[in-house]
Length: 283
Image 1 (cartoon, rainbow, N blue to C red):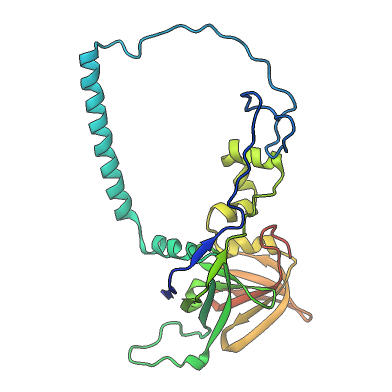
Image 2 (cartoon, rainbow, N blue to C red):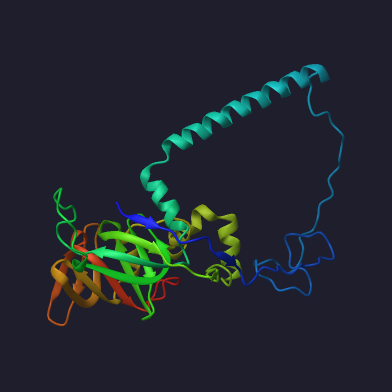
């Protein structure tokens, strides 16, 4: 397990705080209002409304006094269930969940990560750590999965670092941070509509959408970067350059200029890619 150090509180500011108000001439949520930009794939015309007869009806068949007692019992039972649910949720939150929650707070921040690239990840008790054997990486924290993080460096590279190789992570102080990353802001209107109404059917079919809504494993996300050029740093300060050919749960296969070479994830210190488009999963 590694340690995260936070800097002093920062001033968060968004560039797009003002949301334009759309004035509708009539109350129709299933069609495109005239003179406005369609960003939800709405039909051109409103569907024909079928006038239905309306009849007043009582809310319950119970007398008012008995209904009041039943409502009070239901409210008391709901409060009890809510209390029990919150207690159970608090007990079920494990160390990994707390770690992912803390990492989510670092998105968009500049961090310094100290990477331990030695075969002996756990040192014998009483031994001192030699910092010269560790490597430091600076960059913008852009994503965290179940077992790794991704940083964007000043060299237009992304660095993929497994949790098991992280020794320290320090948040660098910043005067202000602009939260500009909104990957779904300019997507196709019909895709936005499908995500809204058919979330369970659409999101699992797209690694890009899965990455946005759920933390993924390193091996799963790397499958979207087959045929991409990358550099892999492994134990003993060795670096392998080549094209990603295949990814399994335990290893990846890289084609170099001489041969194809398999690398176990346990031996990977970090992976670097030259300016890949993480949002669109391209390289």
